[in-house]
Length: 72
Image (tube, rainbow, N blue to C red; front, side, top):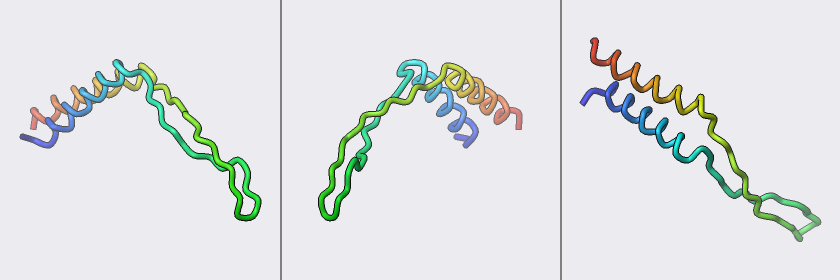
């Protein structure tokens, strides 16, 4: 398989997945207080939204890469 076909399909799959999930969350550990050897930390859950335009752009770019790869 050509590399352009693989990249194009991967971009399309990621774009479709972005429409399905719309956001993802992750947990980070933050230091709240540090006094000498004593340290207070807290786990914070953060959510990042995936804009619809990014999903559409990924799908369109994947299609363009596939078409451009076939023309060569």
